[in-house]
Amino acid sequence: MSVPLTYLTVQEYLKAEDKSEIRHEYIAGQVFAMSGGSKEHNTITLNIASRVRSHLRGGSCSVFMADMKVRIELANEGKNIFYYPDVIVKSDPEDKDRFLLNYPCLIIEVRSPSTETTDRR
Image 1 (cartoon, rainbow, N blue to C red):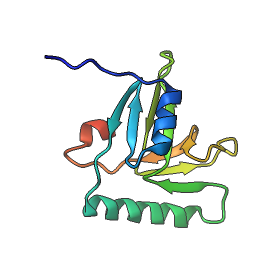
Image 2 (image 1 turned 120 degrees about the vertical axis):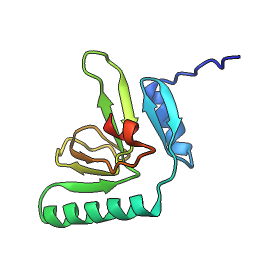
Image 3 (image 1 turned 180 degrees about the vertical axis):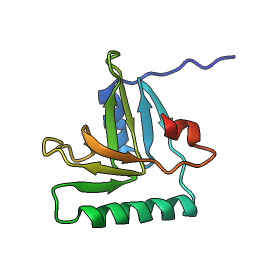
């Protein structure tokens, strides 16, 4: 027996995500719950974010971790992806949304064997 897939609009996803206690990634209408990270993953991510933030201190860039969504529009497809990179840098002053970034200038993903395929996308 197959279960029918449920697709959400971007607006439905963002509204549900604002109320959710766990994070979800959104890929062209489908929503996927995110698993928690390991201590090792968290330590590596924190070290990278700290180094990047220290390097950029005093400039116009901002560094974010884990809970900041990034919106990517797939070229020529009109489809959206929302996901939570491990470390993100924003430098565009037009990127003013409080809960997501549209124009990141750097995205860093800490890969692990269980998430490598997803992380590489």
